[in-house]
Amino acid sequence: MSIAHARDVYALFYDETGTLGFQGILSGEESNEVSLSSIPKQHPLRAYLYVNHDGYSSCCKDYREYWDWVEKRNNDRFQNTLDHGKNYDAKNMMHTFRLLDMAVEILEQGEVLVRRPNRAELLQIRAGAFEYDELIKQAEAKVNQVDKAAAQSSLPDQPDLDHINQILVELRTALY
Image 1 (tube, rainbow, N blue to C red):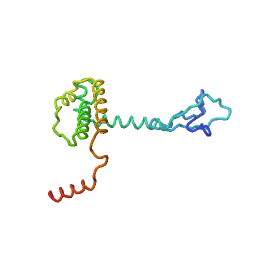
Image 2: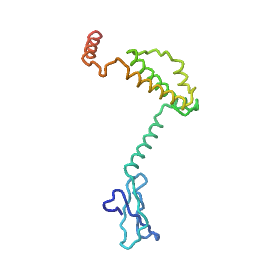
Image 3: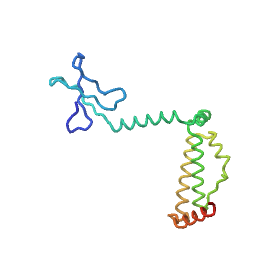
Image 4: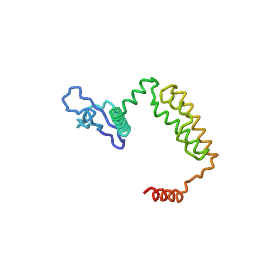
């Protein structure tokens, strides 16, 4: 039985005899709704139940998304995580470091360096050669380096969209 003016709060009753036809708490195995039953007026109240529908729905969504990810994940990549035994996605970590380094280079030098000067280090990260906590500390230091480089960068705060569009038109004209 729902309680008036108390969102998601329900009165709980128990049928010791099993003869009153109470429906239980959940409507069904896959349901996230509370089952409501007709209760005789004199039946004793046992407890109050608060049901966080929003939180429960969010957890169910996260659970479904996780198992969907497990079903569709790249098993070779996951096997690499198991093989190096560090319990983190080493390929993702390598790309995190690469992108942080590239951000600093763009901010300080104004250019994108495709060929990585620290390729060997990045490949070591991908191979799981470092402990997770060590990599997190290094990544945090790199984030601070990006922030410092951004504060001192000579790059404009906003791109020159007219100039970018002009380059795009020139490229399309030349290539097509």
